[in-house]
Image (cartoon, rainbow, N blue to C red; front, side, top):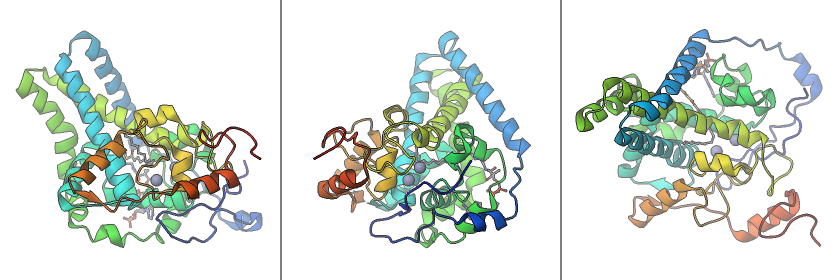
Length: 336
Ligand code: ST9
Ligand code: ZN
Ligand code: ZN
């Protein structure tokens, strides 16, 4: 494998940010680095195997004994927890692609805690490192290490030292100054189990007389595992499969299937080229993009503001300069 060399230096995170070229590392420097030895974290392996087997059990219960209301409730929680990641951790906090009043930040922090993908501060740091050092050893879920590593393997072993070293240089002061995010991180070990597992189990039992086991298996565990896998697909499938209308020199790709399950986050070639666009996609009409509709709704009532986007002209120039010719609006293949 020849790591670290093929990506274009597109490691910008915010509008107007300039970056050092982090992607090209001279081979002789790479050789001097101490050899990285993968260290599996067996506690995580056991937990994730348990969660996935339990989720399968929950899936079986949907068709055998669960009430329809329980399944609808689970689906609803999947959408809410998904929005806590997409509209919250990703578009608002990691990329600052729009601003939100405290009421929306509180709502999104609650949804985000329902998704249990660790505190926003930690999530955003890893994600900023991912964009800045995409597909190098410093990328926490470096897709050059294969589908499984990018999907879940990275959560089953110790991080590459480059992730921690480069991560130290990431500025998080904008997020650290938010008291809501500080509260979430400080009390995570109390509020996460309550919001992610206890309430989704208790509500169906008390509100529509579901059994304890169905309530635990479906809206708590199955819903959590589905949201996790939808998120992980952005790191794996959308970094490996799909077209590249905006930049053919990078691996992140446009993947409609991933966009569908990940509430609009599968248009990943566009997103890596223009990460400050609050839509994480070019085209409107909310195409497989519930998150954009959600942000637009809150913009209408004034809770979201300063929505950042990209001009058609800027997109067109980029498509013509580095696209693979698959762009829908300006045509296929070679242009005059
Ligand atoms: C989960 C996260 O699933 C998923 C994130 C996916 C992101 C996707 C992005 C795609 C775009 C958005 C699409 C959204 C779509 C949503 C669709 C929804 C429908 N920089 O971590 P440790 C330091 S989480 C700087 O233990 P190890 C750290 O501060 C699932 N420093 O590393 C600490 O320092 P100190 C639930 C860093 O030991 C020290 O290193 N959660 C950085 O290597 C040790 O930190 C879990 O399962 C950095 N980037 O362990 C937990 N990183 O000691 C999983 C770390 O001073 N995680 N440091 O405090 C773990 O168990 C561990 O992190 C580990 C690594 C085993 C993976
Ligand atoms: Zn990515
Ligand atoms: Zn991003």
